[in-house]
Image (cartoon, rainbow, N blue to C red; front, top):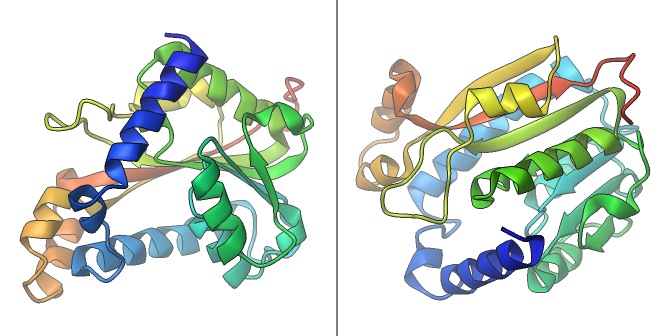
Length: 238
């Protein structure tokens, strides 16, 4: 599949997603969505100090497919300097949302990663981006670009889904094998999180302790992961 054809497919999926019932499932005030956000924040608060460090003020970070800018705002809340941050998007309206909702100084780019120099970032992240790419070559190409932009000793971070969806042909899981092939590193972290969304919605009205206990005690019920891999200091690819 060509880059242009894949982009048009993603654009069409996004247009459908933004219209009504699908979007309502992700409303910020839903209990299951609140729990998902809390689970992600907990894992990030554990992993970021172990990787890029506790002081984020000097960290240069790029969020690929930044959406409305939520992850970059999280980094700013935790001490990152806006002028050290960048976000890319392929959807102009989402990029405009990110720009309008985020502190001034962040660099925004509509398009691919070719505008970013080699080895220019300490952290390069992508949140539910790879599961939206169905084509293996496009996944591999994006992974290589992220690795190129990352400085030796820096960290890539992937938040995505562990399982495919029989009801959503536009999502394809990201496997452990792909993670190791795309971002080979001796130093890496892998954490699973988030109760499967369909189960989370079913249990949304119950006391919070029930879904939290299920997610804690039964790892196979966790639908997402965060993977962080450190680019070797001797890597000369970027």
